[in-house]
Length: 93
Length: 390
Image 1 (cartoon, chains in turn blue, orange):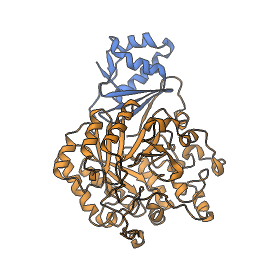
Image 2: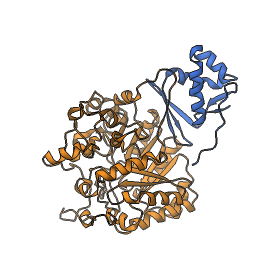
Image 3: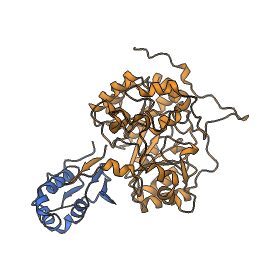
Image 4: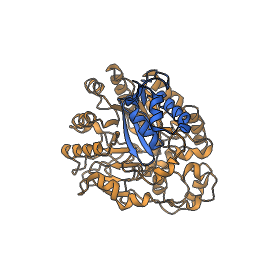
C-alpha cells in the first residue's frame, strides 16, 4: 500500500481539506477523490461538505463545528471528520 | 479500492440516488482504439482492426477538456491495446496534467523498459496488466500464445522502472478460478494489487462465454474468496454474487448510463463497456453537445435513470442485494433485461437460459478478417479440456 499513516483526528486541532483531494458537488453531498491513494469517498450531507470545505478557516475543528453544525449534531459530525481523517480526505493543517 | 461512505446524521440512500443518474459519470471507460495485437477469445470489444474513423488526438484532447469541466476525476483507458496508438503518451500526459487521472489496461506487449520508465515518471497514472491465468498454459488458451510471457515481462519492466504499485488484472474464468491464490501470489511478488473482474458474454465472448464462465460451485467459492479479501479490487463487477450473503464491497448496482459509461474509439457513447451494441448506443462525442450533451440528454440514458421493472425477479428475496444482476450479461445471452442474470446464484438464470431462444449477435465488431472478409482464427475455447484438477 502506498498510504502513509495519517494523524489521528483531534477536534481541538486545526484541519483542512487535503490538497490532494478534489470535491465534486452532488445533490446528496459530494464525491471526494484522493489523487494520492486513489480512493473515492462519498460525503453524504451538504452540511458535511460545507464543514470540510471551510475547516481551514478555523483554528480548530471544534470551532468549525460551532460555526456550521447545530450543537446537537456535533458528536456525529466529529465522528464523520474522524473517518475522513483516517481516509486522508482531511489532514492536519 | 471500493468507495467509502461517510455519512453524518441522516444517511441518504445513495444507491437510489445513483440509480437516478448523476450530472457526470463516476466511472468512465474510454477505449482508445480497436486495434490490438492480440485476439483474446473473450474480448468484450471484439478488437483487432483499427477503425479508420478513430478519434484524432485533437478530438481526444477535447474529450479530456470536457472531463475537466464535468469534474470526472479519472478515466479508465482501454481498447484494443491502447499502447499501439502512436499518440498514446501525448494523450495520457494531456489528461494527467489536467488532473484527470488515468487508469489504463494493457496486455503489456508494448511495455518496453523505456516506456515503463516514462510511465513511472507520470503522476495520477495507474497501470493494469492483464493476465487470465497464473500459468502460461491457462492464460495463453484465452489470450493467445506468448501473451503470458509478454505480460510478465511488462510487470518486470514496471517493477524495474520503480513504477510502484501497479495492478494485475484478471478476468475470472472456469479455468483460472482454481488459480486465484497463485494469481494473488504473483501480484504480491511485485507488490502489486490484484484486480478480478467478471467475464461478460460481450464481444467475442458471445461465442466463448459458455465454455469460459465459472460454474455455480465456482461462483460460490469466488464469493467467499472475495469476502475474505476486501483488498482485492473488483471494479464492483461481482455484485450478482452479493445475493449469496453479506454484500461484497462496492456500490452493488448496475451503473450503466447512470454513473458509468463507455466512449469507444470512434466516439460512440455506450451505456457501459460491456454493451457495445446499437441498442445501448447513446450518441457520439462528435454530436453538437459533445460528451456532456450525450451524458445529460440522451434518451437512452434518461430511460435507464427511470425506475426499472424487477420483472421476473420481483418476488425474489435477493433482489435488493443483486438488483437482477448485469444488463450486459442478460442481453448477450438472450435473456430479458427485467429477469434474472444468467449466473443468478439461485439458479434462476440457468432455467431462463434453458427456455430462451437464440442469443443476439454483437452488431459491432472489429475482429481481424482475411482479405475476403472471412474472420481470421482466434484461439478458440473448443481447445479446452475439462479442468484438470476436478
